[in-house]
Image 1: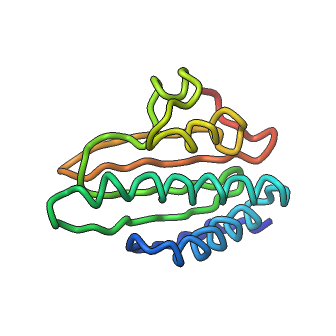
Image 2 (image 1 turned 180 degrees about the vertical axis):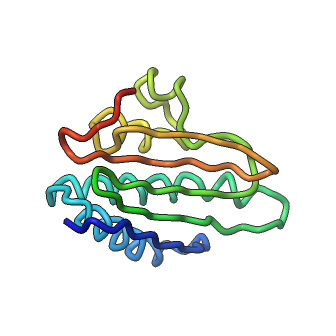
Image 3 (image 1 turned 45 degrees about the vertical axis):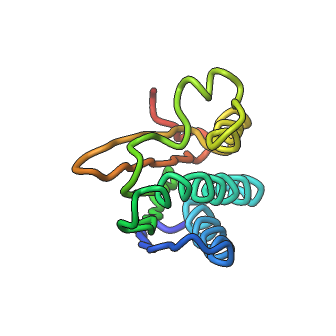
Length: 146
């Protein structure tokens, strides 16, 4: 585990071949934060699911910017994956789909990720036509009070 935080920024096009890179970057950040191997893999899979499920929201924006901006940051107690896009101002997963057990549609996999603890917290923000979702995974014992 490293003590200095690290931040990686990616610009992603809707190309399935790029998901291997997303998985590798998120896994590496989770490793740097001291998460166990199985937790690294699960969190990376949740980040890939979130990207895949966000692209339909971006691609329907009438020809504007069709990329996702992703920022992966590791800290001493957690890893954060921020996914930002223009397009529909709807979160990939919301309280209704999370509490409903993962309804069919765009939010099913990310909601399942929340329920099976691959992700500890999800935050949403929309500002100036940009939607941002942040996935957070804490090191065991370091989870902030909710």
